[in-house]
Length: 113
Image 1 (cartoon, rainbow, N blue to C red):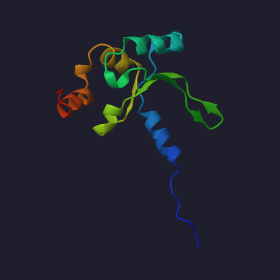
Image 2: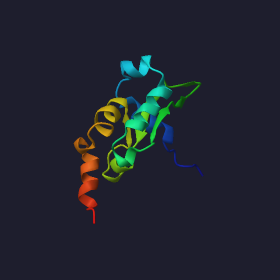
Image 3: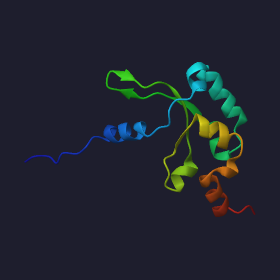
């Protein structure tokens, strides 16, 4: 009896990583820990409060370059990829969450009482 061959889950992760936006110059030249703390402090979207972290993936015998990332539960709820990166966090989550499609969908679902 032979087992059905399945593609490993990490293959899907590699595809997702290839779709990530390029690393910004700020991420390359700044202290990522300070940047992470600043973004967590400036966060205006309630779903992103204290959720910014530094992501680096293990790939084979090496790791990917560390990046500023946020795993947004609101994006997951509407079927988008939950990971957003530095530019989106800085421009949308920390500045004007009403520009975010996931945030607007959340506002429509949850009417304040």
